[in-house]
Image (cartoon, rainbow, N blue to C red):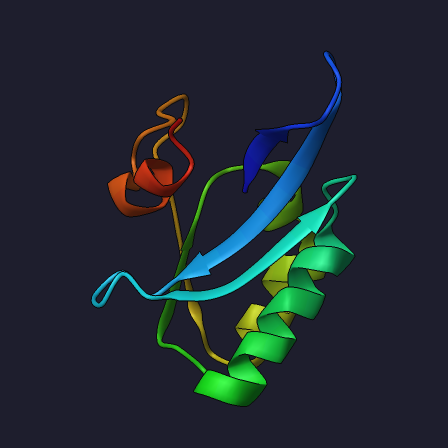
Length: 101
């Protein structure tokens, strides 16, 4: 998840980005007006249907990625969750490098 500046001052969008950390290939991107667990689950379901179910999903500690709506489907698929360290925004340098201006 990263915030994207919108066309006007004070307007931001949420970008849901899934990256293969080994190849740095951008698997999928959603740009939405809000951050939510159901949108994150929808993105993951679409990505998993195309690319298969991964062993591990690494994410920030945002509310959508730590919600039960996200954690339960991952647990059902036996996907291990990995989260960034608390209060460390650059814990995943590959995804952070994509959103730098």
